[in-house]
Image 1 (spheres, rainbow, N blue to C red):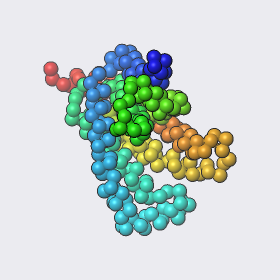
Image 2 (image 1 turned 60 degrees about the horizontal axis):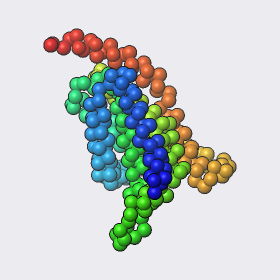
Image 3 (image 1 turned 90 degrees about the vertical axis):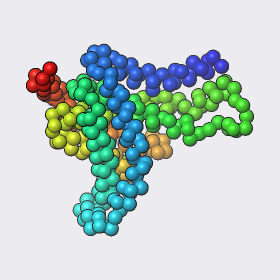
Image 4 (image 1 turned 30 degrees about the vertical axis):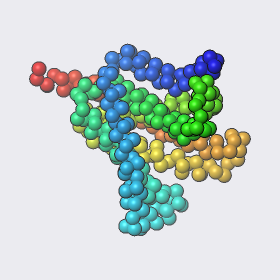
Length: 277
């Protein structure tokens, strides 16, 4: 029993201790505002509720007959690479996600203004997104006879250990570092820069990154179907290609994210000088 508990704690520590330590170290080193994490939690909660509610409406809209000519033209000229309903779906939900974060940052607080706050927002958003991704792993699988027998703590711990497979122990932290973290830090800084500098272009860039991040992985995965990658295991090759694509999508914009570090500090300093005490 004691050994099983230690194993479970060790397994879960990689998806709890590592992100939390990252947030704490970043805040201590940069003095980013802790209120950023609360705003981040509000943003992901709004997006988490809005997506399933709007999905049927967006689906009906993207497959409207009015878009058929555009669909056919894009399919013809892109050799069926660009499927317009999926692209429009990615744009709409990218607009909802980034536009929602823009509104929340614009009207909730005046403290979250600096580049360091944007990075902390991205780290926190990545962690909450990771938890949402792990949650179905446990909620969709119930222990046998859960409602008919009274389980002991040892049985529950053993069930959790068996459910959280050793492969998942490494998979989810790796996804958090290589995919969620890079993407969310990039888009968060861009959205915050748009709010701080009142520049719509940064918001549009964040939406564009979101669209490519959402739409391109399955397209690129299909384009590699002809390669013999069975040695990775059934289904593993496409999953790896998808995650690698999501890793590389925001990388070209990191030069802009780091460039904004100085720009956002200068803008904040100027705004503070012109603000009456």
